[in-house]
Image (cartoon, rainbow, N blue to C red; front, side, top):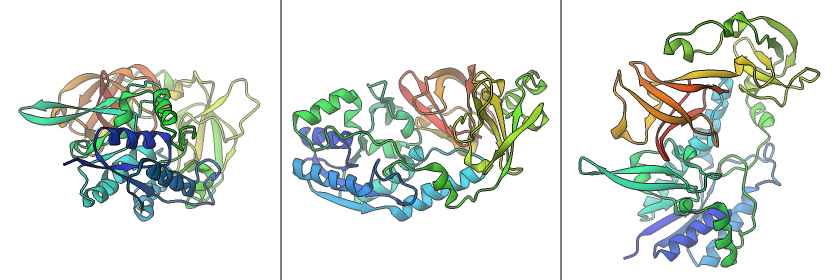
Length: 389
């Protein structure tokens, strides 16, 4: 009897080809579209309207001759993703909704719905791969980078558990994007030439300031320029804890250069949206203080305030995709890590302490931002991840 798999049909070419490939492999395929939270007032609807995506997903299901249904996850998405995003921005942190969407929606709520349909697996159009090994005689699932280095999406899956991986399939992970489009064109799929979505997970492209202003009201505050030769940048930091701490920017040499609409709207490394022209070099956000409603900026992308070599993840936010490789207190290990999607992997050493995990990079990293996910790899295998404090 054929194994049953529910494919998350998003209305894009990747999930369309995913369904086709599984069909060719002999699986019993069911297509399911997830309707997540949607608000026309902040969505740039010409970019990715959910209704059009749902129709495209339905058309693909008809072309492939597979059952299709839509599932409304608006309530769950609002509670688990949108409300979390508002809360994080209000704290002056920068969340990654796509990582959360995979952990909380696609491989939790959606997975449970699929299992109720008698599915053996769920499949998505992620450019990632899964492999299996054995530890002490038990199966252990490995999350590997996609073969297409330009499209690898393993980072977005960095919070998955062994249970979730056991039920997951990523058929296009062995392919490049051009190969996926070629397959779609060869069999005349309706989505063959459809552009990739650039927006939030299954929502579309949103205008972030308006999105945040739904709950986080504008609040004028001061913008200070931090001198690049301030003493705080030349102080010697010896311990991991000291190196992981953000700079105490209020102790730097400051010059007031303008005002902003609310510190909670901005993130470290941001250049656009503050209208700070007229300077010798571009200005970048190097720190925000949501309590005092102050933004700190530095001139030039070589400003020392943009760089740190060490980050810290509290124990409650450390996640091992490979639990068998969990570090014990006092242990350390060499890996490569990234702190954002598409960033080049950088050599680092992980140190497990009583309070949490330190990631110490060989080279200073630009824009280490609280709230974002750091993920560490051994070659092309994602080993673990965590939320940066």
